[in-house]
Image 1 (cartoon, rainbow, N blue to C red):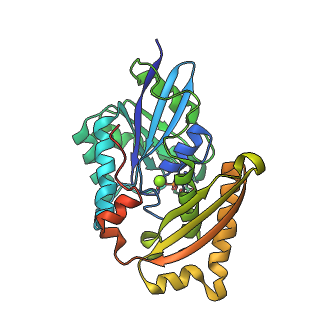
Image 2: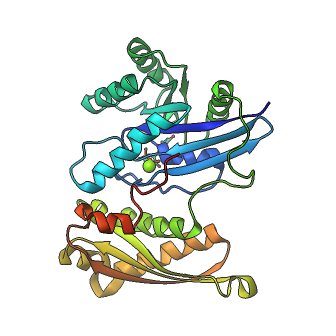
Image 3: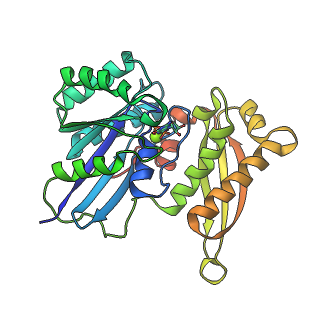
Amino acid sequence: MPKSGFIAIIGRPNVGKSTLLNRLIGHKVSIVSEKPQTTRHRILGIITDERGQIVFVDTPGIHKPGYELNRRMMQIIYEALQDVDLVILMVDVGQEFGQGDRFVLDMIKEAARPTILAINKVDAFKKSRALPIIDQYQKEYGFLDYIPISALCGDNVDVLIDKVFEHLPEGEPLYPPEYITDKSERFIVGELIRERVLAHARQELPFSTAVVVEKFDESEREMRNFVKIIATIIVERESQKAIVIGRGGQMIKKIGTEARKEIEAFLGAKVYLDLFVRVQERWRDLPRFLDEIGIGTEKKI
Ligand code: GDP
Ligand code: MG
């Protein structure tokens, strides 16, 4: 009998959850940056082999909600904790245990789901640093396993997959075997553009930026392997718009060139990309706008 199930990747911002999701499925479907709150949606990454199917659920980082946007992001995490068969709690081996970790641990205890602790970024630190962390977490909760990994370099990721299969319930695959994510190309294209903005943005700008893909024209994809994309970068203030555009349009040009390269690699097609910038005040608190860009509107698992 094959196995199948959902497993949520949970943890504080920046510990490497999205990097792990991409590594697990071998494709970049979830964007990565060193800025907190990069991931705003629930993103599925699916792997299928002779043992069965694992549906990983990438989630936003656990943080205190201020805006409606952040409330929806936390809701995604709470729902994932309720709905999945297993949880991977990810921590950063290089980070001291703090208040945020306490908050996360309490969430895990409260949810009381079978949970694997993954201690990430072991490539960047001495391996021995994982030991006291394992010791501490062991005292707090009965985790199924404690696995030091490097999501970036791939160390122990195969062990993690083995462990997940070990603990997964029996069941038929939930998605066709060729599926790697639930997200559309159009969605991922918007995220790749946002990732390029994040890469160049500072201070408040990452939090204030959203991307809307206005047009995803594939009419010449089959004949010419060509896709035409028009997208708008949304910010909250005129001053931010000026930063994104840059002096003489330099910044938006750079973002556009980098994003186009990423999108071409992702789609395996030639891409024409046209970018606009628009101010939408307080969009992080506007339910209608958040609905429109699809944050917190995913169907339940
Ligand atoms: P998330 O917020 O938990 O989804 O974290 P991301 O996947 O966006 O990664 C946050 C930052 O940590 C990025 O700069 C990644 O390149 C970096 N990172 C993620 N995993 C590793 C790892 O295993 N080793 C190292 N050295 N850096 C990592
Ligand atoms: Mg992420």
